[in-house]
Length: 164
Image (cartoon, rainbow, N blue to C red; front, side):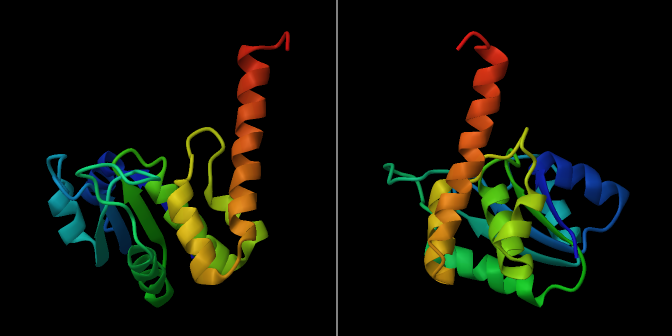
């Protein structure tokens, strides 16, 4: 089983070329199908789960935070899937990478979970990771994502501030 992370636009394009077998589609509650064709892409997937929460890590007025129930739904959906899974959020950076990481940690173990992340484009949502760590009773997940992000910061600093 492969776990792929994509932005909504990627899901729309991919669904025109081939059927997506299993899709976790994460979007904003106020306008879940913002991009033209996104609703059709979700409907075209063989199996899909739509989760509606904002990309936030602390309470913000008029925004919906991810909940433990949201994360449990995603993990349960993934557990029941046969074949590849696409995890998608608006930009394919934060919410989707966090959910994909948690699915991979559950399926393949914490050490192998990094394999779903792309150092150049994924910045997992800390609240989603924290909720997953609670569900799994594995606080180490928070530490692992912190190390991952610290690694990105070091590379970025070396590239942009080489004299430091």
